[in-house]
Image 1 (tube, helix red, strand yellow):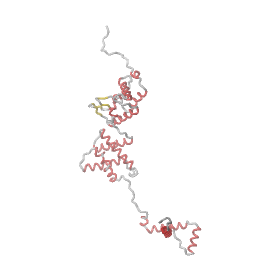
Image 2 (cartoon, one colour):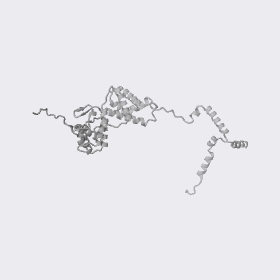
Image 3 (cartoon, helix red, strand yellow):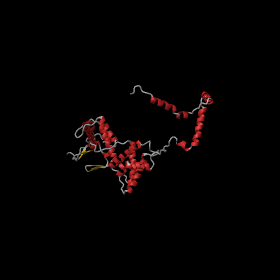
Image 4 (spheres, helix red, strand yellow):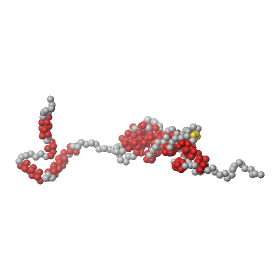
Length: 318
């Protein structure tokens, strides 16, 4: 008599999914890239989950409905956008289902459709966006978010609010780069933001406006409040007042006279010996010697020449 069992096969060998699918090197490399972004990758290559991710990858690259054909570079770029999006928005709601951490998704879950919704399709259609930020600009936007958090008494911001903060940070960064040579030494971007926020806080308290992210990151913050802060807190470089070239001469005529006499004497002492002897002969013969300045101021010969030139007849004129 055969032993009764619960219908479960014992010691059943695992299906050799990895070999059966004939997984290519670039496919395995892509799943490793997916994992490097912080998402999940099935380590058991003989599992159904691993096979599903490989099939989903092939479906996307092939362009099977509803996907259009895309290359590996485009797909990686879409994954990077989704990675940035998930970093900014930890919780995302999909057709009534809340996934607390999108980073727990396998690649096939990123591709597959939930009640007509697909993460990848949302990225491709532009419904999920994540602006590219340089590491420096990202750090700066995070500093702005922390500053806003203290002002508004909040610890976290929604995805839309984070985008507004990043947009405002970009505007301030561009303003700083355009006016780098005019901004006073030691004034950095965050200092300018603090000054602008101070102006906004005074304004909203005067007008009894409640603290909200729009007033701190909107057009007023990047326009009138920014300009007022630059003037009010002295963030611009201080330039000395313009003075006419002869201003110092007029302030102390006596000192100027002594200095000029000293300069004239030095110029005369430095003259060649032949010039000095020639001047002595001119003095003996009663010839007036004009200084360089007097020669420059004497325009009689020039005026005489120009007057003769004007009266000269043009033989070709009527």
